[in-house]
Image (cartoon, rainbow, N blue to C red; front, side):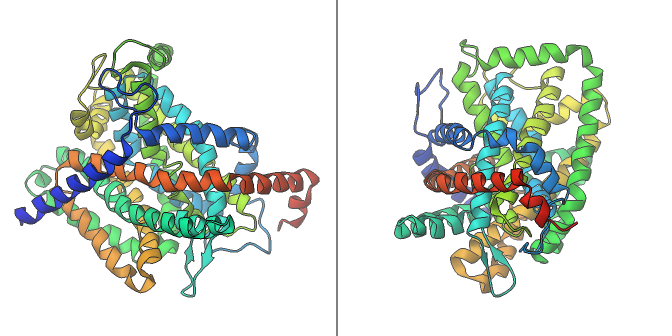
Length: 489
């Protein structure tokens, strides 16, 4: 059995090494004090800035209207889909609000310093526009399959959307590459990373799992299987129930810590802003903090990766733009709110491992969730126990959504008749993650996340003009009152 798990671990390392060599081109100033700026992180930043400007800061000016849609104000008789806009948002949020908000934030700060928090917030702001663009395209090019399910996301708008632009062959190739990385990303970031980060915290509260980590994997596989076998409707139903509860639950603990350190909050923000732009050699200075902030933010909110469009494509709406506007809340809630709150807890308590020194990335990767747990435990001794439950829920919610993402990509590649095989593989990986090396899992999942961005960003840029045109037409109808008149009261 150990030989099998060793082989699996070597497989992860091999895939990670190959893809990393493709993605880790040094940009801007190359290697600064040993810190690399990944090529993909660079193009994510540039794409976010470009689309935010092109869409006229849609992430700010349409934020209020987006909330009205989430509340269910703009329903029409011509809406098509199988779940509500709020259920789609909850499903997508359950995939993003997870271990990344707990572990990835601590990893970013430990490696890149407190300044990485600032760049995470900036990544969340730019990510709102990236998410809006990819979700809008997902709704425009979604496909209603004969079995009653809906196919959407990067696979569809890359293949069909680029075909509309006269790039049919390129679109098909990119869609296949995207789907392949989506399947592997679901098994890595959406599955094994969640388990590998949740396991140490659970082991700290339940000693039995120290000797039998596989038992934790079996439990998680069982309850995950109960949900994902039911498809998107059951996943959406579970997500809309647990996501608001777990976010409120987690933020309640955060506010307790912030109240304890209330007088030091201004100093924490001052440190964040200072280290965001410092040029001294703490983890590579400005570019080290920027690289870590953006990279971990993308890992948390998934903006620019094309994954969330898979969940949103099942939404019951008339206008693609409408669900795109709903998706603005994903990076905002995930990164601007939840990640910022976690960062403040870690900084205020001084629990991040690196302090003012460079921390080895391998050490940080393995200790991400433990750092956050230590931060909470330094304020209230029994908080780590509650955090253990929160991490359990975060991991579970992320896995059920990513199971669906991977399943849709699998169906795109191999057909709907084989989807049950993918689900069984996904559940098996949950158990495997409890015995494989966690450092390998973190590297593997981060690498695959970044790999998704390459074909996706190409499609977003090429089709951004179509999205801007749809947005202009939609805003005209909104201002004229047409959208209010066609809504069901």
